[in-house]
Amino acid sequence: MHTLSLQDGTPFPAFGLGTWLSKPEQVYRAVREALALGYRHVDAAWIYFNEEEVGRGIREAIAAGDVQREDLWVTTKLWNDMHAPGDVQEGLETSLRQLGLDYVDLYLMHWPVAQPKGVARPSSGADLLAPEACPIEATWEAMTKLPATGKTRQVGVSNFSASKVDAVANAVGVTPAVNQVELHPYNAQPGLLAAMKERGVVLTAYSPLGSSGRPDTMRRDDEVRLLDDSTVADIAGAHGSTPAQVLIAWALARGTAVIPKSTNPERIAQNLAATKLELTAEQVAALDALDRAERYVTGEFWCIEGSPHTVESLWA
Ligand code: A2P
Image (cartoon, rainbow, N blue to C red; front, side, top):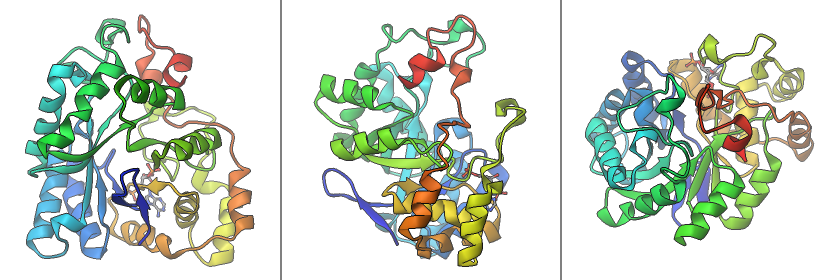
């Protein structure tokens, strides 16, 4: 199994199970199945509204002896409405309670976006706080206190640009261990990858298969499906593998962690098997060349009328 090393030397399993958009009634089985097969990393978040079922899958896998807690990596994330420094620990404790775990391995600030407490999803500009009102630096400082509580081993960020990573690291003097962002051949972010490598921040690739299952409201009409790409298909053909497996192998070849989501037993197994697939340097280069800086998760939902954010400022 591929293992990356975090800046303090902690081993970080590079391949994991994503749970965004996994239906609560399906995700328990998916987690249970994945851990029985050999997955050692599960990625969760408060806003996925399925932490209880994810946690049940984890706890039952441990009880069944499929995995020991210390051999398993669990990540979850602070939601936008818990960014006030005084609320950050409560955010983690709520997730732990829902997961039914004593600690997680990694706690991430889900977005560089703050909302008033109690607002899960903004429906107007008033549901988003100006960055000055609740700065990411202050939230990050509160997060850096969490490892000392024993409730998370590591802290990091998600959806952060290199300049935002620098802003929080310089303000607080602690660099995030991980930055979880959208990465796949259509949104390869080579500049961010290089910048994070330089700073010792590991990137985790979300939506590595192009997030084909996300809601229609998050889709453009002219969207190109990454899983249908002909270059990806040709490389898959050369290995007798599937397009999804090629995308997972590419993510691992670049030194990122990768968390494909599936609740389907066959695809859960297929995705794990991709960790054994080795692409040639030419194949990696051909996939790199597909980059068109195209996000499937654009962040436009934080940029509604009256919001202090724009798509430009969000990713700047
Ligand atoms: P399902 O859960 O039914 O398997 P991403 O990780 O980029 O967000 O992609 C997740 C989407 O891709 C889900 O809709 C998931 O559906 C689907 N998916 C997961 N694994 C595979 C695979 N091996 N082949 C095709 N589609 C997959």
